Amino acid sequence: QVQLVESGGGLVQPGGSLRLSCLASTRTFSSYAMGWFRQAPGKEREFVAAISWSGSRAETADSVKGRFTVSRDNDKNMAYLQMNSLRPEDTAVYYCAAVARLRIERRPDEYDYWGQGTQVTVSS
Image (tube, rainbow, N blue to C red; front, top):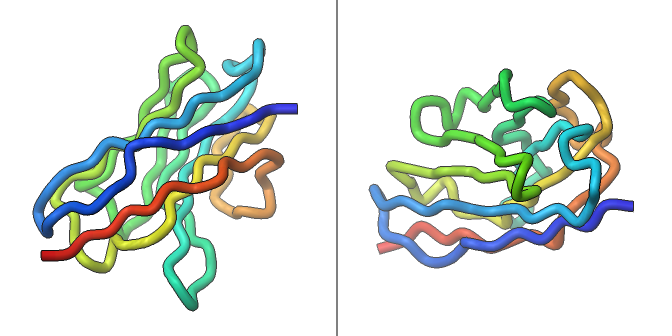
C-alpha cells in the first residue's frame, strides 16, 4: 500500500508560479512511475504530466507543455510539479498518482494509488 500526500496548492495570479509536492510513504518509491492529474468542476480528470521510475523520462500534456515540469527525488520519496505562467484555465484540484510500472502512463485508470488532491486557483 502506498500513501500519497500532495501539498503546495493555493491561490495565484495569472502568470504566477506554484510548485506542487507529493510525498509517498513507501520503501520502494523508485519502483513507481508517478503521474500528475487535475480535475476542474464539471470536467473529467485529465492527465497533466508523468515521470518514469528513474526520472529519465517525462511527459507533459500539450496544454501545459513548456509551462509545467515534472520531477522526482527518489532519495526523499518526493515527486514535484513545477507550474509556471499559470492561467485561469489551470484552475483545478491537482492529484498525484503512482503505478508500479516502468513505463509512463497517461490514463487515470492505469494508476493504483492516489493522493487526496490539492486545490490550485489561478485568478486575479
